[in-house]
Length: 386
Image (cartoon, rainbow, N blue to C red; front, side):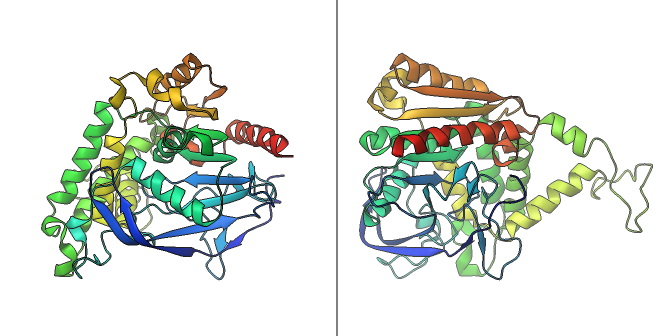
């Protein structure tokens, strides 16, 4: 029952790959490492493995906490753990930090072994397909030849879908949450504005800011503020902030406008600036550019004349897709496109559209209907394995 779950104490691990990872662009990433975490126990025949793919600003730290570090819960800790919807008493869950990220795997902040210099702007362009290939290599090292399930939300959902296309025989089930088969032009536009905010920051130095001992924090702040607006629904913003003015320094709630073009007047302004400041203190700017580009590039139907049904014909997995009514960044209609294409291919598909007010962020929150849908689906997977 909620509130009585056992807590997981977890440790991050690193796996080094001395060879080269061939990339979609034609470039290679050599002598790289991947950070990862595991939760639960792999069964004797290694059939209970579940791969969880992370979204833009998340990492391999999916669930549990680090010893001695309060408030270090994984980003999907409400979903994954002992007795939770994805029960680590039954499943062996794996979180992998994608290359290009800034949370332990090889990324732009690392030294390029070919040059002896920090990669910076020279880090190769990555795609969702490249990440899936890297994940597959790590699973090979763990001796996992077939996944009980691959799961992800948002950009993680794109990776889950791509797994069913790149390695159809290695995936029994795919759980795709709050995602889409490609980005709309509007979404690409939001990403481009965020990238321009970073690239035009005077401290960006063409992506080689490490050499100058600076960080393009102003650009990162704005990029995060733009992104955060798109993750929330209008209803949530109005309910949480409305048009309320922020409290004055002395704690007295202001009842009138200061009429300033520079000061923070409204609570929503204060909230966005706080989120931007926090993000710019830990996230790498080049990583942000790389990951948003990978989002933009993902489009499995592109090589099939735009025909998603034809693109998904190679899939063999069973699917659960979940969307949220107020998610305008990855609207339910986009999930239904994927559902329709899978049904056209006579695939086994379950679909849940949750009426939730939280916007895109709903996939990270504790909506009981959402959690029940996922729990029920994984109950079915467990029965298949027993």
